[in-house]
Length: 433
Image (cartoon, rainbow, N blue to C red; front, side, top):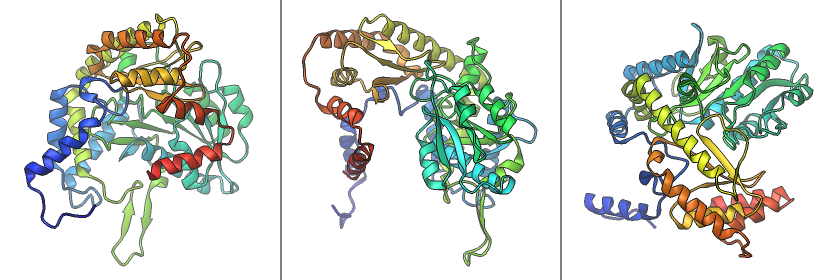
């Protein structure tokens, strides 16, 4: 493949794009249960128009585009207010949850260098269910992850966490909710432990940050997880999930301005000029910032409440339907719109493959093997046909001696390999292809 000597026509380029997306997951008809968070065509249209208005602008230099600086400030301020921040609470926009988590760990490391200079091998406590981006942050920034075991409900075991704190611990992390089973860690207890030890506490609300506040207002029993909780020092929340913004929009928030200063990178001696960067990236797409601002302002609190009710009503219908299928069981007691289910009777990965043959895309998980779903507003229209297919596919696997193939075989094999380095090599090879 090489760049064509003569460029294709506009029509040919568009036709090839459309042709190549033919095998992509069908999120527009709510066939996917992850990756895409749609809230309807009207919101999508506003977000797209806002993004395109700032398609070429670059937020690398806030002096060049003061409008983007204003939009980012507004987005941060709205997020801080929503999550009950204080007058001195601040934050930054990032490209997504992974970058927000990277910044939380980098900030903790720099904070510890100043406030805990005796620590030369820093550690952070994080539940076994914490997002894998924390492992990435550990790899990048040299902060060792010490995993907190989970209790029977898949939540961080606080008593075990207390035993794991050492003089090298600089940060404790909890999820609101954790991605795998959709349950919230006991944030109040983890934050109290961090406060007692004089260290930082980060809440990963990338998944729930822009949904839980509205779910709580709807009357669901959501335990405090945000800046109302003493000891919580930072929070990450993705706007491109349940904030329904364009991809590439998350926030990392800090209780105090002084703490955020440890996030920044500055280099005053570059011949190219004075260099300062708030987050990981240099170039920062203006479209993502403008689209996030547009989404928050267009949807508004009333809109988010309406969407949250649709999501939670749909989730309850989905969970009731899954529980009514004899072969299946839900893991834990999910706190919002995320559900993982497994089976003691059938191969759950084969069930995923059977459902995929009918056009449904469900994520496979491990430890334990299960299928994973995240509900968005469009799913309200397809719950019955989905549950009908799920019942039929589960029943078809009861008593079968069929050999797993495809994704089911791969996940089953990789899940059982005791040599995890071999699994790492497999994943690297998979990425290369």
